[in-house]
Image (cartoon, rainbow, N blue to C red):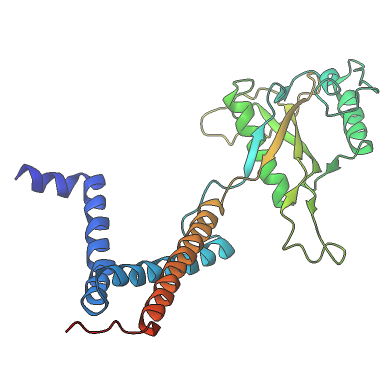
Length: 273
């Protein structure tokens, strides 16, 4: 009774038993039929070749369409040691702005924020349109990093700008229209500009007050790098390893066929009297 309860309630054990039974019934039944007609060794080679070929096709489909067994998706990651920059004067120290032209804050938060935006755009940073999905993705990732670091709590700041740089793919052909061979990527960085908000007092029964940017406090910046992830790596490994196993098994069967043909073509031994 305890064993039956374990199978019913422990999903790990139940899943393991399902896989074992499925492997024993499906490939095992095919091997049993082949073994009774071809022999144990040749039947095993044929059954394993068919399984490896099927896994190769399945892995290739998963690899192309990004389905099946998947790895981690691409996401924004914090830059080590320079994730949240609270002083705009450090933008040159962490490599966002050129070090030979250090940014010198004036002390006026509004003027400094405008000057930083101009400096970023003049040094190759692209300011994204708030309507773009990439703006929303980077802004959400930057907001999550700010909240997790406890610099600001939720509702105490707002995203006022997202700047993008890098991420070019290569090699591409025909002015970038053909890029299915673009396996190499340049590092992709993003800078999210956040502005603190004026604390608002909430009153019961009334709608929340509209958020107002606090112009007396400087803007802060979140420095992130794009992690491309490994979404198709598991399916690629399955596809390549299955192909290798398939080729090895085919070579073994081909070697056996040649050996059998050579034995049949050899002259018969004289019969003993």
